[in-house]
Image 1 (cartoon, rainbow, N blue to C red):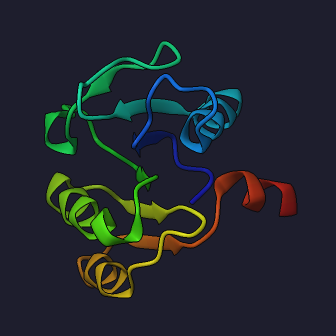
Image 2: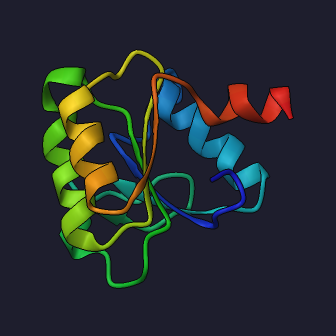
Amino acid sequence: MLELNTWAVVGLTDNPARTAYRIAQVLLDRGKHVIAVNPRGESVLGCPGVASLAEIDEPIDVVDIFRRSEVAGAHVDEAIAAGARAVWLQLGVIDEAAADRAAGAGLSVVMDTCPAIEWSRG
């Protein structure tokens, strides 16, 4: 999944102290196309911003979710509806039922880890 190019990062804001910001920078450093998904639809790190996955008008490879486990499932469902190829639930984000829904819809699923960790293993 790390070879996929277009990453919609749910929960990405312009706060450099947040993990989503740091991981988005890692994605950019790796040449990925990043779309920030946040309530205000703000652009972050020079990347386009949208308020929801439904607003993205290009194919989405990975939906990278930086939200609490209790609300992650709704974003997984949005990823399925948007036709994403994969969902990535970040370190500490666990929703087995949502992961099962995504896998059942044909999406690749990664849960409870981080792209930066996976790249460091590679």
